[in-house]
Each structure stands twice: as structure tokens, then as C-alpha cells.
Amino acid sequence: MSIVRGVYEGLTAIMYSLMLDVIMKALLLFGFMDVIYDLLQLITSILWMSIGMFGWDGVCIINRGGCRLSTIYRYVMFMAPTLLAISYISYMYHNNDAATILFLVATSLLLGLSVSGYIGVLMISRQFRNKLGVTGSAISIIAVIMWLALIPSIMEIGVAVNAVGNALMAIAVVSIRRRYTPTRRLIHR
Image 1 (cartoon, rainbow, N blue to C red):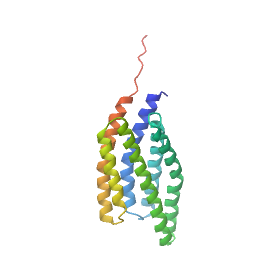
Image 2 (image 1 turned 30 degrees about the vertical axis):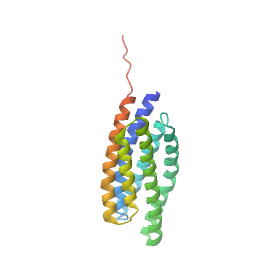
Image 3 (image 1 turned 180 degrees about the vertical axis):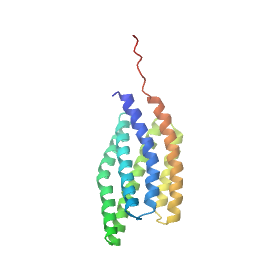
Image 4 (image 1 turned 135 degrees about the vertical axis):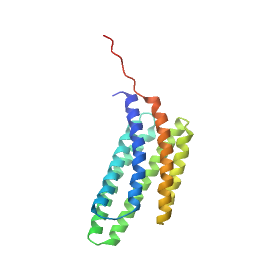
């Protein structure tokens, strides 16, 4: 696989990761519901982290910060879903205190990972002088700060603001990705 193709696929994965990031936060906003809903939260978070890890590993070629982000995703992928799963099991066995604490710790890890991804997009956007990505990163970081209030109405607004910021970042990533579009070789016979 060529370097150009690897960067192109990495940027594509980051774009999908930004979309899944908003979906994951919308799911986490509701907390514990039932087994199917909790499994959906767990699967979405694992999928989001896996796609993010692959994406930042591909971008590692053009930005060294991507290598570090890929490593952070790799380590958090073992911790956060495990804590989420244990919190769901604790909730099923009516140990609400332990379930709440573990859920808050796992959500904090996921929010921290989101912010590190936004900072990664900020670094790439500044590298390519893309002001849209910088603006989207700032908006999404503010949206994550809104989650720290732990007030449901403010958190809902935070998810909506985060969706706007992630959309701006996705547009910026698409414009950067166009520079790395793989070319096909024509074979003459």
C-alpha cells in the first residue's frame, strides 16, 4: 500500500470516527436503560475507538501527533469498554453506587479521548492552514466542557453543539483528504 493511499484511508477513518463520536455521546447521555441499549453503547464505543485508532495510525505519516493519538486510542480501548461492561453488570445486580461511579469514570475516559481526537484534528488543520477544522475543534472542545456540568439539559445542548463542531471538522478532513487521493495507473496494451 502506498503512503498516499494509507493517508487517504486514515483521513477517511477519522471522518467516520467524528460521526460515531456524536452518536456515542448521544447514547451515553441516556445512561442505563436495558440490556440491548447498554450493549449498543458498548459496541458503539468500541467501534468508535477502533476506527479512530486505525485513522490516526494512517495519518501518522503526515503528522507525528497521529502516532501518539493512535497509541492513546489503543490503551483506552482496553480500559473504557471494560469499565462500561462492569458498570452495566453492576447495574443489573442492583449495585447502583458502583455502577454509577464506573459509568462516570468510563464516560470521562471517552470524553478525554474525544478531546484528544479534536486536538489531533486541530494539529492537522493548522498544518494545512484549514481554519474550518480549527473552528470545529474549538466548538467541539467547548461542547465537551458542557458535559462537565452533569446537568442533562446542558449535556443535550452539548451533544447538539458537538454535532456542529464535528461536522465542521469532517468537512475540513474531507478537504485535506482530497490532497491524498490515490491515482490509478492506466495499463496500455
